[in-house]
Length: 194
Image (cartoon, rainbow, N blue to C red; front, side):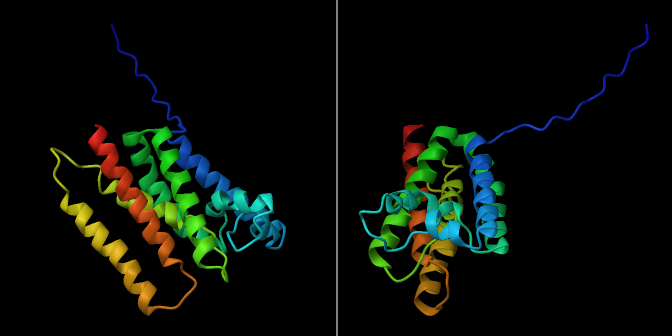
């Protein structure tokens, strides 16, 4: 009896719904911003000091992470998000990744709104930093702190502190630091639960 070869069919899977959904919303927000000559970012995707009587003020506390100032800003954030995020979503689950993302968006938006009234904040870099620090907790075993976490914390968070003190640019270093702290906190708590 002759054996027949079975054809292997490659399928594309939507393997990481939170991360992929986030990336698609960011792309949509960027395209909308291009079509509206920047008005949609101002209306929906930037945190800035606005009246508390404006309902969009509260919505922007969460949606600012979808807006990006340029194509390179979007690509830089999405590249890191799409490399790290699916692995984290597989380990921690979609619900937990959604909590990390929403918490980071709100906390970075709130801090920026309160302490930086003269500037606007937009972009997913706080979420990316949360994911970076969260990823360094993925290998915790037996209550030990991985050397990778220490190195990532020193390099990424320490670098943001140094940049915030010595470099004056349009990068919100405090957003990166807050995101990193949220990611580290969540990674610590998630590993205690397990």
